[in-house]
Amino acid sequence: MAAKKGKGVLSRPALVLGGLALVLLVLVIVFFTGGVGEKVKRFVDANVPKPPETSGAAAGAVKTVTLFFISDDDDSLHKETREIAVGPTAADEAERALAELVRGSEKGFLSPLPPQTKVRQVFVAKDGLATVDFSRDIADKFAYGSSSELAAVYAVVDTLVYNFEAIKKVIILVEGSERDTLGGHVDLSRAFSPDYSMVAK
Amino acid sequence: MKNLRISRTAQAAISAAVLAAVSVCLLLTASALSLSAQDRRIQTVVIDPGHGGIETGAKGRFGNLEKDITLAISLKLKTLIEKNMGFEVVLTRDRDVDVSLENRSAAANNRKAGLFISIHANGAVQKKAAGSETFFLSLNATDEETRRLAYLENTGNDLQTHIDPSTDDDLMMILWDMAQNAYVKESSRLAEFVQIELDSMLGLRNRGIKQAPFKILRGVACPAILVEAAFLSNPDEEQKLASDAYQNRVAEAIYRGLARFLKLTE
Image 1 (cartoon, helix red, strand yellow):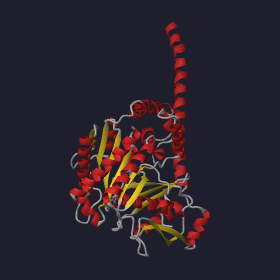
Image 2 (cartoon, helix red, strand yellow; image 1 turned 30 degrees about the vertical axis):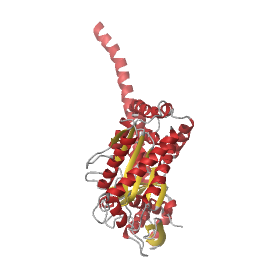
Image 3 (spheres, chains in turn orange, red; image 1 turned 90 degrees about the horizontal axis):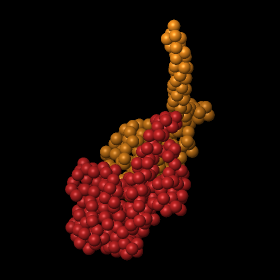
Image 4 (cartoon, chains in turn blue, brown; image 1 turned 90 degrees about the vertical axis):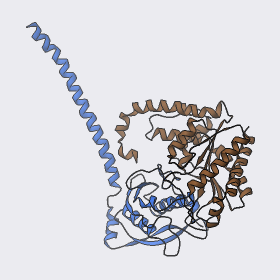
């Protein structure tokens, strides 16, 4: 009897403790998934079509973007304008602008990127950070020196930030992954701000 | 990208582990940085021959590879320094092998390098691009880092006590970033002297000193520069770079620049 009673008394705090632990666990899970959900939502948000832009795309509207190429005559980046289809998102337009950059100049400028390069995807986050994913050709098809590697990186970064208000900084990925450098020089682990000092006046 | 994958709450959860990691790397950084405060005398110079192994670097039209030319110049520079100065010289590679950029800067830090010189030969898309230039690190820092940096500059090398462990960035990376950042002024001065000598000895176009976010310079905890001896992509300069005489002149110019820098700082 006494033993039974004792057991009952003992089990009550144990139950309470167990209950508390369960509540804590649930809280932690909610906290975690809530956090992840927020991030995912934020990430997707920036790529969700905005109503005015969508209507523009439906009308087959075009916009003019400025691309940055190399000239054989100097070490600067040179502007060249190009028309691309509008919308639906800044990321879509950014992909088109970069595809045009890879396609090359129509005015005889040189390409800073290997012609085989494919723009796999561009993400634009709400905080202005664009993540650009290139095919491995961007790294494998050129034997970069410091100058050509700087030109390749900043042609991409300048093209994106110059044309798209939604983009403030750029991270470059290769084949979906982070990579040290394209060819042993320029650090790709950090986001790039544009460098217009390389652009011809 | 890392903060996109890791939620804010997950970061809070691992902050204890991060704290432990921070204290470890603070100790490492502190020992690396103590060089500038306690014993300014340089004992070891690290020379980094750019590229190597399957990583060839730039290629010339006549088939010369950047990795071979950088090694040749580096070996000549090593001989010059050892013969004329009392320093120990460490090469990040002494033959044609792959060495990751991280291992190169780690090697310099582990050997308590007093100066770090990375040797390269340039490459450009345009064939006419020509000349020599010397780089030091551009900061490309976030606003948060810039603020810490300003603080760091005002507090000398008291780095270890002023890092907020709750930051949501990759702490290790920032710490090592700051390691080079503390030396950016000296690095720019070293670059200046080396470039003056390159200009006077090589007779090439002087492209001057420049800043760039080069991976190899970022993690080095001492004055660090990257020398571009000439353009491999320019056929005239490629032939120069491949010649023994020109390689000797590049090594001599860097050596003289180094000597001028040391005279000033001693």
